[in-house]
Image (tube, rainbow, N blue to C red; front, side, top):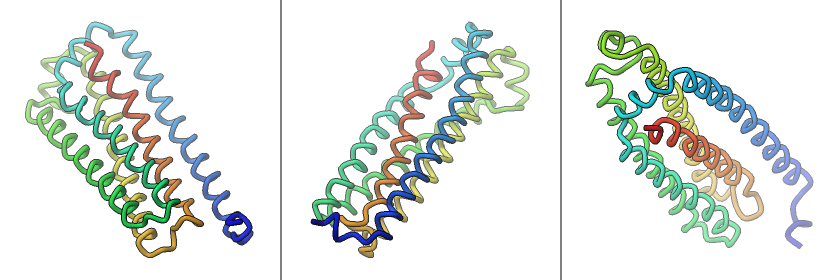
Length: 206
């Protein structure tokens, strides 16, 4: 019955936004897919150097961030279910938890990058040029580009989730018009998926 209650305009909006989000996700996967290929080629050519450079990374922070993102994927997935069940308060609570986890991820990343920069390990630094081999310099270059790009996606994801949460609060996103929240969830799952590839490639190869 609810299906018939939707106007044709609502249905079209939801479908169009879903298709738009999937196309966007596809372009994102192409972007990161290209970077993963570049990483694979350089790693194949500099296996020993990549092993040595990976030792410099903090596996514990990487592992904590992986667990955090997996939990946040669950909270945002459950939030779409609670919206369908008309539990607006619980939906907003779950979205709040997702946002907090995303912010904690970024704070961890900030401290991790900060520790590297304190040790003079950043692209173009004198210490990097003099103390590390060309292969290790490549590793850190890829590390900063790929984890930095991923952090940017986390920030974009958080903005989308906050926007969706605001619309849920206002009531314009509800059990009959859930496309915005579903799209926010899709994007967040993409961000998590990318990290699940980044974590072993950079942190677990030694």
